[in-house]
Image (cartoon, rainbow, N blue to C red; front, side, top):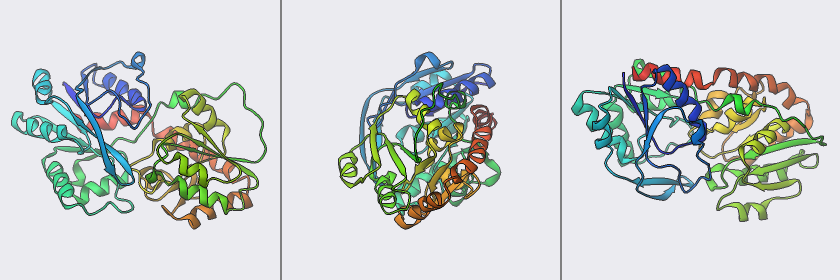
Length: 361
C-alpha cells in the first residue's frame, strides 16, 4: 500500500517518526514537503538521517501575523501533479492551514483514495472565533476518512467540528528519544535551582509572563533562569529581565541536550501552543516541566505534582506560585523526574508511527 504524507517542512524532530513509519510500511512511504525550512526557524536539515523517499514542492514563502506569532504561507506548484504521479492509496495531510490540504482532499475524493487529516489543534484556551477559518476546517473534517491526533485535547477539538470519534486515531507526539536521552559525559557543578526556557522569543510564547513571575517569586535569589532561543521579542525581554536571567541565544541540539540534563525545571509558559515538543525533549532527560494550560502538551501530558506542574496561561500569579512551590520545597523537581521520564517511555517514534499507520491503512 503506497502512502503519501504531506507536511510543511523537513523538521528534525519528525525524521525519526517518518523513518519508523516507512519501516512499518516496508518502504512504501513518500513525503511531500511544502518547503525545506521556514523563515521562523533556524533548524538544519539532517539529510543523512532520512531513510524515506521525499520531495520538496518549493516556491514562494512568506508569513502573516497569527496569535502573537507569525504563520508561514507557501505558494508552490500544484500538489495534484505529484499525487497523480505517485497514485497513492492513502494520503495523510498535516493540518489545514495551507492550500495543499484542500487540493489533496479534492484529489482523494475524485480518485477515491483515503484522505487522513493529521491535526494537532487542541481544544484549550481561546481557540478563537474566526467564522471563515472554522468553515474551512469543517469542510476538511467532513471530507476526511480518518483523523490522527497527538492526544485527547486535539481529539475533542475535532469532535467539536463534526468528526466521528470512532474514526480518530492517536499518534502520540514524539521526538528522537535516543538522542535526547543521552546524558552528557561531564555534568558541571552548580549552586541553586536551574530553570530553563527553550523556544522562539515571540509574544505567543509568554516569556514575558515567566520573567515577571520569576522576578517576584521567592525563587529569584536562589535560582538561575536560562533563556534559549531568539526572536523579535528578545530586546524587550532582555530589558524586562532582572538578576539571575541569562539569554543564551540559539543553541545547537547537542548543547541543548546537555542543558536539558543539567537543569531542574523546564518553563513552558505559552499563551497558546498546539503542542510543545520541548516538553517531550525535556522528558527524555527526565526534566519536569511547568507548563501552561493553553498548550496541547500541558493539558495532555502534565499531571500537576506527579510529573510536572500546570499553570494558568498568561497569568503571572499562577506561574509565580509554581516558582514559590520550588523555593519552599527545593527537592520537588527531583521528585518529579521519574514521572517526567515516563512521558518519554510512552511517547516514542514507534508509537507515533503506529498511530499514523493505523489511520492510513
